[in-house]
Image 1: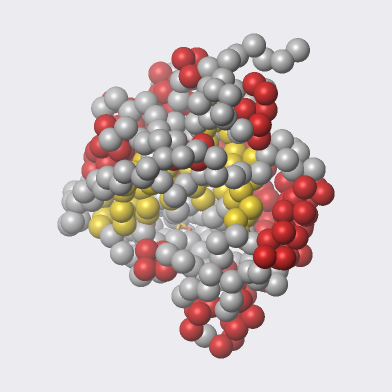
Image 2: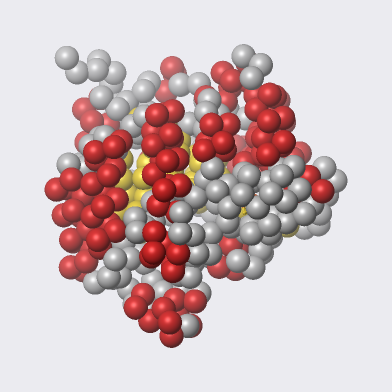
Length: 351
Ligand code: SF4
């Protein structure tokens, strides 16, 4: 028997699944609220901060003492650095809705993607350091602006700082679902700490092959790390579920950017998602690759110094469908973007 919940008929099948994937909004409570009320969030914060002492927040395992502001591969010390915070209308329709996704872009990154389209943020560290209170205030401002969720972009290296700020934000009234928008180069410790905190995981599964991961991401172990954490994310929150209006509330949204000439990786990734997670996994197969950063300027990466062609994208979609995936993201909501930027404090503050 179909779920008896009602939903807006304009919500596409791949989101609502004829009611199978709909949670009534009035029944939804963000995961972190329950964890907080059960008194378990503070323990998570303490455990997470301890990871910074000999940093193994991500698979790089740099073992530097970030509590003393020492830095490793991600160049981040004790405080998180924020590049920008705003109502984002470029995200998937189930996240942007009609008021935007409350996006917080963190500076620096633990990967070194040679094709990074945000290299000023990820490799040059554009932005300002923020204290936990300042980060909490940014979350609350995005909530006040009417955003549908708080969307942490590139959070892999600042999981402890996010948890620390969240505790303050909850006291301040934060009640939006949290989106963990990651490259999937996370440690299993971080994802375990986010259990009962994150509502929506949005891992970008980039490459399948370890040699290619070394060449293009400077992380040979990327595919192993990604498989491990994406599976853990799925075990925590399951398939994507939405409210009556098609807004994401809980579950996994996998992104995959199709790369020129690297369709073997696409084929393996979508097959793995269907077999190891579920054919009901919600997937955004993305066609917007363009060469940036070193892929554009260094001759040794000339093989990826072009966009993908139409036939490559069609082949990528065909691989996904052949694997059994059917919840493929597409644009369906008409909205007029209304950008609102939140002020990020310009100078380093006190912890
Ligand atoms: S979070 Fe940064 S310092 Fe810590 S292990 Fe990863 S790259 Fe190294």
